Length: 327
Length: 300
Image (spheres, rainbow over the protein chains, first blue to last red):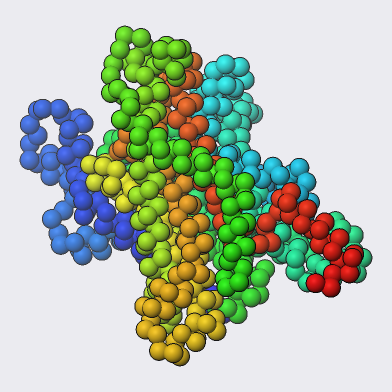
């Protein structure tokens, strides 16, 4: 229970830090959405002060003391109001995010789970059969891991899309289909997601493999593995139930952190494929000086990272009793 | 450390992964320092736009006729600088916070842990995008500073854990009992034993810095003239649909090769810290020798 209380307390502090940082950064440095909006729509024509005032009210710009603004900001957050997007004016930020989020979560989420699954399995085998060809492959995989993931995306897109015409060059679905639970749309969405998913899997698999392999090597030197061998258990059983089961613990923690970064982890990949997800929205927000949207996306990303970590901290306490005592 | 140190060094020198890694990184460092002095202006525009690699243009040209090879050399300096800046800054911050927390313990430790845990779960790339966009003068130093600020927390945690375990060793207690001041214990008793881990974290931070900056530059936010900047211009210059592979392949390849070199160095540091991971041909030979010695009745 003490463990649970501490964890909840930590995440409350972290959420508060993320929210406050999100509030402070634009106010500390710069960012006047009204000026951006006017520059975008008006050009050189003068704007009547009343119109400017109206826009200021809409975007929530005020000369109130910082703490009043801060309370107002928190109040708006609690009501799910993240302000209006400048680049998609007058759409609320929440709507923009709600449209983009599923694309990213499904693409990157599925790709991450596949990468972790394959990576851990290969790592387990490499650690189990040390010194075989699979294990000798490990240093070579560093090359894969060191590749910038968006560059791999560029190269594969060029080869498979531009040269061989096997995959579509951009987008998340065929624009002639209607978004929804219908066959043609789902088929085109999967078809468009194949290559982005492949690049994410290829560029992230090596890290999982290496971590798992090293942990396998360490756990296999433990006494309980020797005992299991001495008892004459089948090698397969020793590998899976004795060595791998314990070796996988650090990877569970890593998996948590990665899941949290699903929302933000593949921004550049989304750009390469013009994928209609959060990353593309964020870059659009940046290039349009759309601070409300930027802040909103950043908040969603922070919260998803924190949420995933929280869940896995709880999970960790469940599967590894030592954690509960150590805290 | 004690008696094993000389064998460790001998092992390090014989290690092939380390040699290859150091050679790769050394090569890039050399290019970053000397390279830009030997080339013309990388931004010089010529009339041969989008020429494939040839004897005059080793890696072809861009859509405005700039020489890709020249740009690659010039960008090496930018990327390597970022790597060095991020590596140094992140390492210094993580050592200060991690070692201090682990050594002092108590309330200070809890506060510092909370602090680094908060930084650990903050997503790096979006935060960097936000800050670099607001700061908008995207100099190398600013970009490096921001990346370092968001990437030190992981190594601080590792260093703290290791310091915690070192703090309770007998030789540290002995030093404390003999009246050594805290700073002396940290600098002369604890830090030397953390050195391999710090080195590994440094290498890791360098890779992370170069990759993060490349991603930022690729999104048009990286500031410095770097490999990522080249990729940005390649994408916006339609290199993909124009089939100009020579424009976007080399910069990414440089990052991948340099990153692999750095990882190889990290591998050997890992094996240095954790001898169980050591394995190679001479290892197997050693095992055979052991078995042989045992068979002969290893009285020695």
